[in-house]
Image (tube, rainbow, N blue to C red; front, side):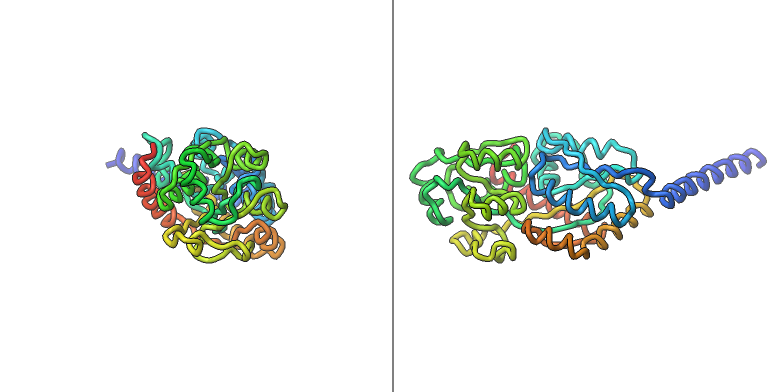
Length: 323
């Protein structure tokens, strides 16, 4: 009996010690600068939004939030870096739909979207935009489809990499339009947009935050956006749905994840900071200029969105025969 009491007491002390350690860590958070990993190159949509939102979150929590770009491996390099980081809230991940796409595209998947991460919250929603080089003699989706059908396989579209959401957005368009386009993957959407401006590729299904500034600058031509309604940032550009392919509605989103087992007290602080940051007038103006719409969500809601997106993109990947 004495041994059992001693063992019980030791176990209770250990549990209380762990609880106190977690509580203390949460109270002292953040203890140093916070690293926000972006699994893409500078200039991509997720990078742009990550820098805008990360800076404001840092202002709220009283610590520097700096973006650490980790492109490569279809995004898996940066994602795995966060999955293996200490769950103390000082290493976070800015994610886009590509995060959920890789769960079905890669065999075996390099991470588990539910088991390896703790949702902090969605930050924004947005659309994709079909952008073409000015030399391409098309000014609408209908003209693009007709031109592509007259030259099967001769037009190429760039993306942020195999399995990137900009890749799948193009594959989905191909399947609905019944055209043959050649896919050219890059190590991030930023390099792909640069190559499109240089005329090395013909078109791209870019995240609107990466593509719209180039359209406004006159470097590229915007044919259509991918939402169920026109983007508030580009009201003069029609949607693909109203341009002849009503089934083509593809939305984008950006959100923040922490490593699994991050204390809920820290997740709560970050979630609260995200919601506060998204009410900043300066932030809203910057996001509006990039075509992103603020849509902060609670951690649980963001977790449900991720699971739903995995199921949605799995169907697209299967239909396209991708691997």
